[in-house]
Length: 340
Ligand code: 5GP
Ligand code: MN
Figure 1 (cartoon, rainbow, N blue to C red):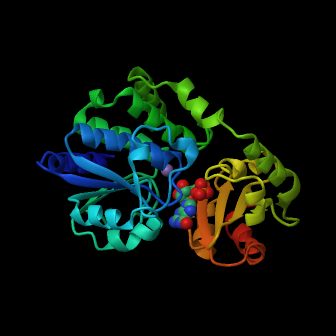
Figure 2: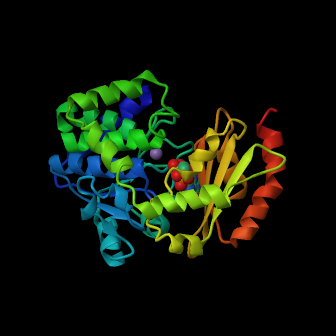
Figure 3: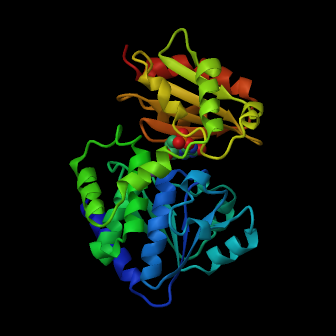
């Protein structure tokens, strides 16, 4: 933590300079932690007089667009030239909730040649090099860490109720509603302070958990009833979802959020993998219970990575072949990492 406070102090000095321009970039397929962090940090930088823009390589999911400032973001899909120009012209580039430019999709080539100062604010293992490194794998979420960054630079008074809602959104969603990766007392001190600063917890819960569309419930029901299979040899659940199924249930980005966690509620299952067919690739989501490191599986065979209990990856293979690859590598994974 000592090192992090030093980095925050260095960043504070840098941000005190005049006429700064900044861009804020979340990871591809941004989740509640990435979007919450973008929302709160945009407000913090803007209030400090820094001209900034949120750039995404794809789009923010509908269920998070209520967060303040998120609809102001610029997507590379809509305005590639604007994104390119804003990156090239920025003094500072903030990478939020990811540890490598490889997780920035189509923005990667432009971020890779960025000449200004890169700042990583994140909680994933093994971050790549950056001028300012504010990274801690022990925190629940990037939003928890960002609370420390914002209060360290501008004081706790800088956090307004909308920012408190955004930061809590990240803490809540990245911990599965405070169920995993949330046993450090500090997480609750941060939440307590956010409440003092105007966090409206009921409102956040309403937006996160009470805005379902019926088609989303039906898609999840279909997946659990007809698609979920359990491996006969290992405590492993797999849920494959095809493009046709997504279309049938009128899929919107974020509709499958949380599905992959559900099989872990079964006593004997300790790994759950969701495999979702997208237009050009297959996306994998890994979840596990206890000390089973699914990030190792994602990293070794599925071009991905992530946290011990929540990881992801992607493959340019047909769905069937991805399932086959999971089944083929399952013996290696369970024999190496799971004591039976
Ligand atoms: P999700 O299953 O929610 O998409 O991702 C869970 C976690 O896995 C994310 O928070 C992120 O840390 C990690 N992750 C997801 N996809 C990828 C990927 O393609 N590459 C890497 N390195 N990590 C990923
Ligand atoms: Mn996160």
